Length: 143
Length: 143
Length: 82
Length: 82
Image (cartoon, rainbow over all chains, first blue to last red; front, side, top):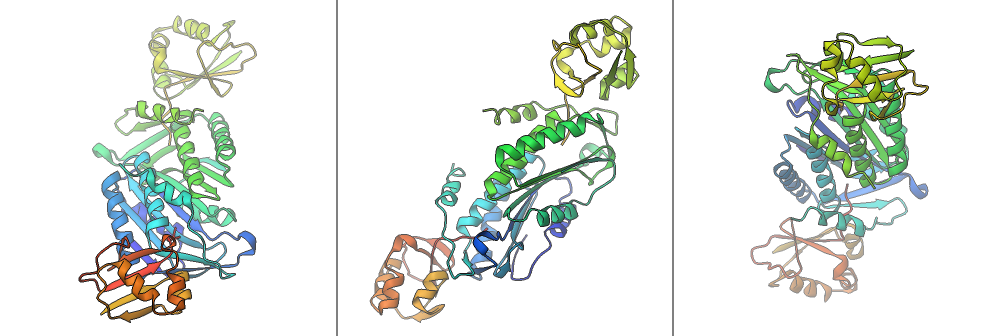
């Protein structure tokens, strides 16, 4: 399941719906990314590439599902202006055992960070720079 | 924060309250354990050691917080009879960066599995056996 | 006077959740030997120490731990929380 | 006829979110050379290819990718989602 939207979402309600649907899974992991108010930031703007975003996330979900035997996976990612403290995105994974649910969620996050076409701009007009560590994080998933 | 209780809890509401309180964290990870209906199981009974349970979980939280620089951590664990599909427990961690939030949550889970005094009994009267893999999981956190 | 607690299948085998014990046992292992000598239920519960864990005053410890000053000793199988 | 899309600071430097381009460029790199020759804004946006990523028909690819049959090419900085 994936949703790319400008509207806010309720991470708790999404987690509950996801968990209720993931019958038999046993282990559910979620990640929520929240806008940090560093250096007086008050608004974060997220640009995305409509069409490619959905295709890229769908491919990442398929790969994570196959690789970690996930019974279900969810990605919600917002675009547009976001206030400090608002959730930017969330990921949830369900699996029979906790190690796979954790690995699936980390894999999804690592790929979303660097392979889904989103770009963050701080309210001063500065584009957030990609971090080397985010590119490096992908290396551990190479076979 | 920790709660050991027989009452059900709302994992989504707990996640939202935790995220709202974790201002400045940026990254929030949660784990929810749900009773699986394997082999016709309908009820799981969890026994615990009142007093030691709270002390053990508090110590595990303190260690995770210091080790991964968590800005906040939450553990909720139930005891008593639980129906299939009900949440058994949840963990949530907040940190500035996702890697630390994920590691903190996995550390908490690995220690809760094998070091907090809970015992699961299936409705047929069989006690769930500890798994070697759960003990092995602790080894990776040794320095 | 020591409170001895039992959990999970240890409690079921012994048939009691707790008992008060007057003992001069110096270590957990000495206490186990004393309890095992009481009756078949205790002997059975303590037959395989590798399948047991012990906490003294609510802290996990080992069977060679001293009991001096201890108020509460608990025996139970490996934990299965989470 | 190719649709060329720009995102983030690439879009800001070029001053357009998208443009239609008629080209015989065989590869992405050839297209970049053509676009860079147009004006200073394009030249500036494409000055450092190491700081750019490219997608052809919404799939990430490399600058030596062929353009035969392509309908949409997008240029943007490294992604910063999540």
